[in-house]
Image (cartoon, rainbow, N blue to C red; front, side):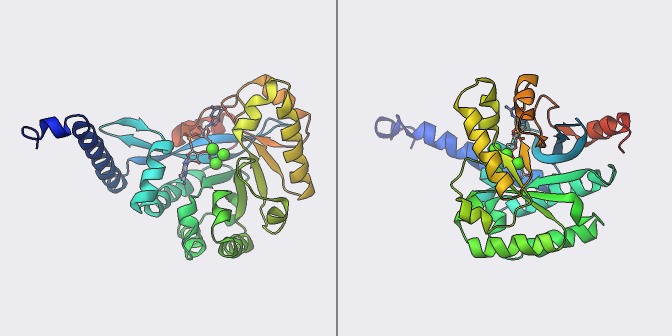
Length: 275
Ligand code: C2E
Ligand code: CA
Ligand code: CA
Ligand code: CA
C-alpha cells in the first residue's frame, strides 16, 4: 500500500497507522506491566486543617514503564478501563497498598480511587472484603473514593453496594464533588461518609470572587447532610488560610506534599512519631 497507494493514501494513512501502532504498543505494555508489577502505589497526605496532623493517605497509581518512564493515571486508567483490565490492575495496587499501610499508625486511613467500571461489577464489594481479610487490613481504615459518574448508572446497585461496604466498616467518599450533577435529594439517599470538594473550586479561592460562594454552598450542603468534607488541591498557604474560615475540614494538596512512594511515607511518619 505504501508504493502504489501513495497518491490516494499519503495524507492520512501514515498518521493513522502510527497512532494505531502506538495504541497497540501501549495496550501490550499495560498487559506486561500488570504481569511484571510495574504499576506502583504513590501516596498523598491528607491532613486535619486545624491541627496540621496527617490523618490519612490517598493512594494514586503510577506506571513505572521500562519504555516510557513514569506514566500518570490520567493516561493509563482510561485505557485499562477500555481494555477490561482495570479491576485486575486496581486490585493489584490495593493489595500492595494494604501491605504498605499496615506499617502505619492504626489511626491513619488509606483512601483508594475506584473506577465506575469496577462499580458495575455486582461482586465488587465481596471482592474488596475478601482482600481486606487476606491482608488482615482493618475495614475501618479503608476509604473508597467514587465519583458522581458512578451514580448515573445503576443507582440502586450502587446504593446497595455502598451500604454493604459500610456495614463492614469501610468508608465511602464522593470524589470530585461539585463537578458532576448529583442533586441534593440523590445525595440524601446515598450514605456517603465524606465529600471531597474538587480541586478546581479550591485553587480558585485566592482570587476572592465567586469561588467563595461556591465553596460556601458545597460546605453547607455537606453540613446539611452531616458529611465531613475534604478539600483537595491546596497548593499554597493563601488557599489554606482562606479554607480555615469554614472551620473543621480535612485537606490535601501540593502545599502539604506531592504524592510519594511508600518508602518516603514511612520516613515521614517515622519522623513524626506516627509509625
Ligand atoms: P483525583 O482522585 O482527583 O486525585 C487527585 C489528583 O490531583 C492527583 O493526580 C494528584 O497528584 C493531583 N493533585 C493533588 N494535589 C494537587 C495540587 O495541590 N495541585 C495540583 N495541580 N494537583 C494536585 P494524579 O495522581 O495524576 O491522579 C489523577 C486521577 O487519576 C485521580 O484524580 C484519580 O481520579 C485517578 N486515579 C489515580 N489512581 C487511581 C487508581 O488506582 N484507580 C482509579 N480508578 N483511578 C485512579
Ligand atoms: Ca481521588
Ligand atoms: Ca478528586
Ligand atoms: Ca480529579
